[in-house]
Amino acid sequence: MNNTIKTFILMAALTALFMVGGQALGGQQGMIIALVIALGLNFFSYWNSDKLALAMNKAREVSEAEAPDLHRMVAGLAQRAGLPKPKVYVVDNPTPNAFATGRNPEHAAVAVTTGIMQALNREELEGVLGHELGHIKNRDILISSIAAVMAGAISYLATMAQWAMIFGGGRGNDEEGGSNPLVMLAMMIVAPLAATVIQMAISRSREYIADRTGAEICGHPKALASALQKLSNYNKQRPMQVNPASAQMYIVNPLKGSSMANLFSTHPPMEERIRRLLAM
Image 1 (tube, rainbow, N blue to C red):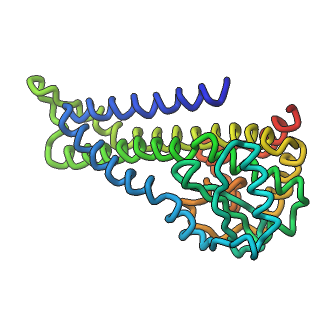
Image 2: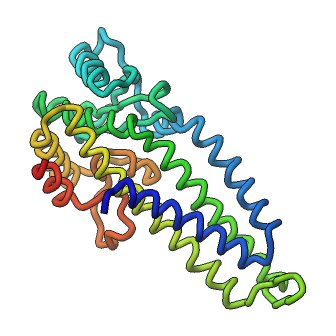
Image 3: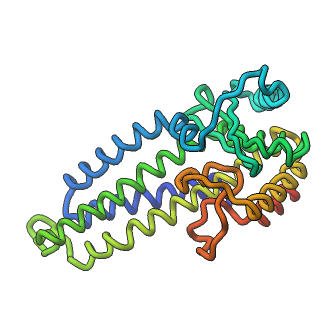
C-alpha cells in the first residue's frame, strides 16, 4: 500500500477512535472539552517544537565559518529540493545520527552529530541530509503534531472515563445516552494503547517516505542505503543517551534495541528500508 495513503488511513483511524471515545463517555460536551485541552497543549508544542527538540538534544547552531562544508552541502541539497536553506545544528556526540525539526520549511533546522561527519563519506552524508530535508519537504512535523493531538485527546478521554467510573458515571442512563461500564473500561485500557500503536505506525510510514524523498533529492539511493546500514551498526554498538521522547526524530533509532514488539517501534525495520532504497 502507498505510504501516503496508509498515513491518511491511520489518521482517519485515530479520528474515529477519538469519536468513539467521546461517544463512550455519553455525549458531545466531554469530547469537546477533551479536544480543546489536547489542542491547547499540542498547539504550544507545535509552535515551539523546533526549540524544544534542539534544546532537548543539546544541539548548537553552527555558522558557515565553523562548518563550511556542511553548510554548502545543506544549501546545495535544499536548492535541489526547492526548499529554503534550513538552519544547521550540531550535537556533540560521537555516535553518528541526524534529525530535522521545524513546523514548516520556512522555520526548519537540520542537526547532525559530530560523529556522523567522521563515520560517513560525502555521498552517504548527502543521503542522510537528503532524508532530513525529505521530512521538511513532506511536512512530517505537522503530520506528527496532528497525530499527537489526536493521541493526546484520546488519552485525556481515557482519564475522563476513569474518573467517571470512580464517581458512578459508568452507570447506564438511557435518557442521556450514558455508557455501559464495560465500554468505559475498554475506553480506559484499550483506547490509549490503540492510539499509541497507530501513532507509531504513522511514524514508520513517514520514515519510508522520507527515505524515498531523500534518495531523490541526493540522487544516490545506494549511498543512503549504505549510510543507514552504517548508522544502524554504530547505534547498536554505542547507543546515544537521549530523551526517549525525541528518539523518533532521528534517522535511525538512537536507543538500544529491546525485545519490545516492532508494533511499538517508531522506526521501520532497517532491512526493509535498505531493500526499498536498493530497489530504486
